[in-house]
Length: 54
Image (cartoon, one colour):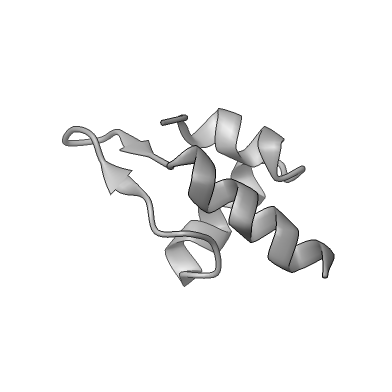
């Protein structure tokens, strides 16, 4: 699991753009870790990056 900043960096997006894409549902669905904390599974991010590259 990685947080928003790490997920954005992994996918080569700015944090603001990553959060916008998350709200629009254009990135993998995050897992709610707490009231205000989201996390992404590494496998989901790898799949997302690979699909984007294809």
